[in-house]
Image (cartoon, rainbow, N blue to C red):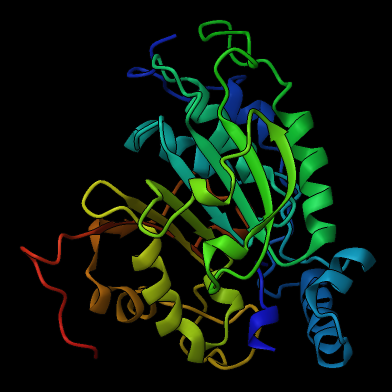
Length: 308
């Protein structure tokens, strides 16, 4: 059952999000928060019940439309974080548990704003569910057609990276991540992906879908996939619930910053700066999520601490 877990998920140096810009055009999420409040709580309970009896796990939920984690659009805070933190745009990007694919379009658009040639860049959305990948293909194709602000290059096809939708297990070899759909560009192929290859990994509602017993393995896997020193991991820590919340009831399982630290720090991945709330979180998730950037340190000069 553990292997059936998936997500709940011109020059650019002065690019700043503003009303009417790409971030607003591409990001129109619903008010659902996926954490178990109001009507969403009923959907979450139905999802948990279904997972107990379904033989094919999460794919059945996508086929039946039982997806309380799905915001209905990319979270606005992602676009703002990318523009403010400015991770490399010519890169390989991974979104495990990509779900409906909204964030893939945001990441691809961000990469396309590079003044450099991004023909070698690729955004990979990974998911176990073939149904979710079919949905993602439609969303990404549609979203990438949206023109950006007049002050930016209005030709979205000019400099876009490849967007690959791959079906596979996050914890398995990258060679087993089968190409399900190629939305744009040319496939990197199986040999084009290797461990420690990703410049940026986004985790939003993937970590919280995993049973707590699998978090250490998640941290180890992130260390294997992330580029040393230059690679960045962006985690949107969600759902952060009151201390009295039942910690082992999920998905989604309640999380804390310490949970991520315990999983990542033994493998040399350290937090950058201070975890913080974002004013761009959707209203229903404000106060329940924090933005946290991580960096994989060079173990030869900064060995990771012992496993806690």
